[in-house]
Image (cartoon, rainbow, N blue to C red):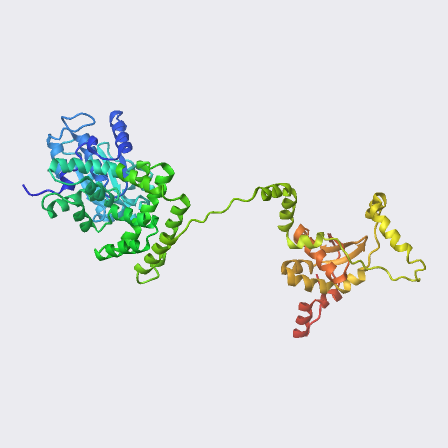
Length: 561
């Protein structure tokens, strides 16, 4: 008999042998027991976690003649043929090689034929996402209503590439990455059965390098078994995989704790001299500080760190030498080094700089504030709160809300005979509450006239255009029609209601009033109305755009709106 690799030799034969996929196996077992098995399944998940193996086990269970509902016998003709991959009732198709519409049409034709010896005809399509959209569309009707003796099982590592119409016709079961503990346990079983001499640390390195894939882990173990003579050592697996030993990571971190720059750089140099990839070392060191963070935060929960228990204990012990801030700072420095390396030809230089920074780094401790300072802050908290509120106000509103200090007075016709009495009256009025209230409600005479506003209307528009062009554009369509009790009324034609609504917004109104104040030194309120009256021809001709157009084309205004 020819040699069989570990990945095939130790492939699971029934549901109980599938590693690390408890929820998926439970769902399939319940469906078989209750006779509620769907006609199409989609097995989605990363590589090497048991998707195709589970599909074969399900096909065996459906067609086994002598076994129970959940456990195939592995001895009948159907089980043996399915295990060998030569069953006429279980058709395994590679989606990458049979992805076109012609292959799918052939499949549709073959679906019509009943199974040869089993109860069901099972189609297992691996990497189903490789099928073209036309091929998927040709399969839709058959997939939705297949013959009662046909089952479809699709397997894929990229479920997002499958069109929604196919996904909606399948029951999806998600396979997860196998944990480090489960991988080590399975590798220990294989090592025991194969009678291979190997250290447990080696199994941990193999399991970690496989990234949750049992097939990858078994392939590496198979390679080491043929590569090594006698007992497999840690140095051999590190040499084969190019990984960084945990001891090297713990060692360089200890030197960082001791602030021993010379030792840190010496360890890095040894790693480089051994031919290790610096980028792999940097990634491993980043992961090491991630594990230190988790160990410090969770007291070394092995489930979260996903490392052997003795390594988790060492991580917890080493994490006690750091504060959480120091661990996070080191993590950020190393990640930034990884980003910097993408812009440099050499990774060694930025890595050495970062390690020296970490070795020289000191924890900054902020001295607590004196009790007197805290008491002062608490005492003046209301005042501070008000100052903060004032500081975040909009600058336009701030200017408008300030009291107007300069007031234009009418010229005095007669000389003041008693200059001493005037200041006395001004000082008494503000402190007499009744007089102040009367003054607030009494309409003060306006210092400018409507004619003054009309004459300077274009200046107002020009000034606003420098502040906010949209306000100037909208206001240009209106005309000042009255000024009474410091209220300026601006009228717009009936069809310009949008202009009125926009200008009535609080911010826009404030900007207009501020612009009028800057030009005429008088505080006016503006009010907007809609009127049937329109601007006259003379007002329109004063507009610079209209004026330039008339001069350019030698025209005249017939009707202005």
